[in-house]
Length: 370
Ligand SMILES: *Cc1c(COP(=O)(O)O)cnc(C)c1O
Figure 1 (cartoon, rainbow, N blue to C red):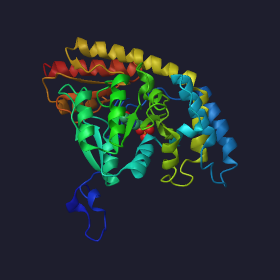
Figure 2: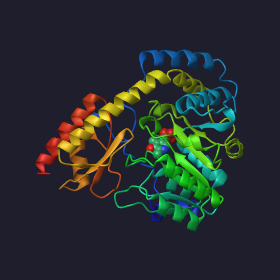
Figure 3: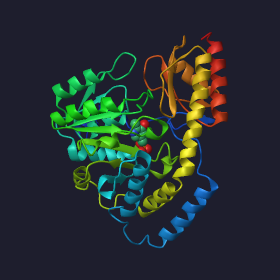
Figure 4: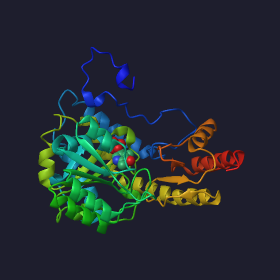
């Protein structure tokens, strides 16, 4: 059911949706699940116990609607970002939703006017949500090695005058970083055309680059998106958030559904924040593992894009990438074919999963003589 010919004629589907197919990273069972940039570390016993206790407390109030404004959670997120970046924020600067995908959707609903600009390859949900909300998506250009040429990007902003410009840093699927000085250039350019610069920092905790939240006071058109899905190992809980000027937060309240964030979600996200020390130690372990996997791939003679995230994009095979992907899956290793010619993306897993991936890949490459 994925193209216009298949929809029944009685179904009054909106025109732009007809050629679309649903978001679909394969959810297949594998010994090592290294395909969606999840964090491989399950919540600790102490975190599980704390979540269980809070859920029991909240459960006796579930006959009531939750706090519509998520005040306690937003205060906790503001405190966390303030501690992380050294820039002071409070609840007026914070918004939270069911995953950063809902945050992105709210941004489009509030600010998606004529067009939105992003630089491919990047996070596929930005153009997808643009389509769903009927905003014209403009595919900006990168260099052949997928790095962002900020002078070219700035020129595209000035020419296209989009109300929304998306930058993902560290970028997905490449892992590469846009420097804070380059973000400043884009903040100035987007402001000059009356647009917002949306910086998706889903992987910021894995990177040592300065966060774009440091720019918000001077450039109020900068919006920063974060998530608990990656560094906080909390993808199943669905909690994404945004840091911005208070005017942005006020505008987002116009498009949010009433009581969108359940009392359970708010409570467990608050508990996760109180375990941030433990969770960030897991980030350090993954960064160390990333170095090990990168060295392993280099030893196999492959080319790797330098990554500041919890995944690596690699290539330089003599077999087609989709065949390598399948042969790895046959060996119980699920990674991601992101649709870039001759490249594959692997999420950093536990030490054991990473070793299993590297030895399976060694076999596969030897089979095809690379
Ligand atoms: C994984 C990811 C997200 C996270 O989405 P959630 O809805 O918070 O799980 C957002 N942006 C990028 C670039 C990502 O890779």
